Picture 1 (cartoon, one colour):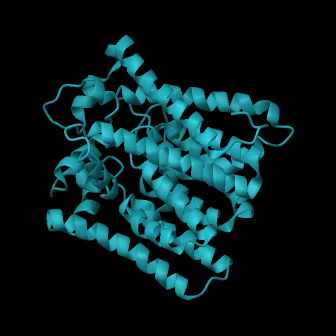
Picture 2 (tube, helix red, strand yellow; picture 1 turned 135 degrees about the vertical axis):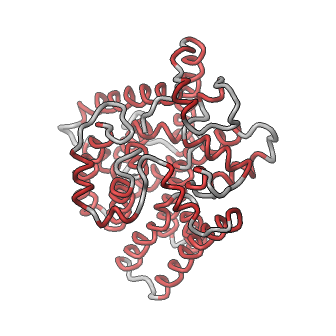
Picture 3 (cartoon, helix red, strand yellow; picture 1 turned 90 degrees about the vertical axis):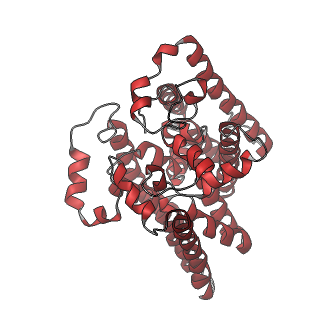
Length: 378
């Protein structure tokens, strides 16, 4: 992106779409040229649907968690299934889109994920441009797009939907579009486990902007309504309100809010031995957590509402999930990329901006090639 020329949203969208098409093409080419790179043992050992299906070309895109989402979009929740750990809005949207393309669930899932992420990148650019101008907005957006964990915005994962709803929420609050903000407040708790925690930055926004006291109760009611809807959906399918929470025990991380009460154990998980591609001990997860911590004081000075959002989205998953998938989870902490945009827009850092973007891009390309071949990268 040329940071010296202001771009409109159509140009930004065009560049993002072109990059997305390149990534999808790269996965296809790699599958054709190096078919033996695919990790069949990992595919066989992990959940995949249909169970008897041998890995083929579509498994390069239908990977790890997306297997669960595709399964849920077709079969819904079942008691005792590990898929019950995943939240309902994303598979529900895939199921709805599949009505337009029956028998081709993967295609609408990929299309939806990329539509939501393009929308999220545009919202991010517009939000940052309004606050800090074109150059910082372009630089920040570039870092968001090529961040290694952002590879999941190009595949059928729920991150695209979550980031879109979160940014739409902040845009609506800033624009005084209460109808849109309340809709986001209802939907976020049905999208990801941390969705309900978006209530806290909303409370911060209401407090800072001296909004009417009734807004606390209105937005609180919508967030609680979304959370209640999640539990009702789980109950309708499984006859157990806590089936989704219990299903976390099927996974190595064993995600639990109870871990927040054990900071010493969290510190121990951070300091344990690390390796490049480990699920519980990835060095990249810990590097990005340190970077996240370093940005927090800068985000606090920049925007208190964004700071609370960053704290919830960056710290809670690290603790409750014991760093598993942290490279993916931190990709939704959008203020981190605003800090990067500001930092690399300074005169002394501009010469290093291209190198930093190239390094991040190179790591993302490596990650997406590994991930599409069923190797763990987050």
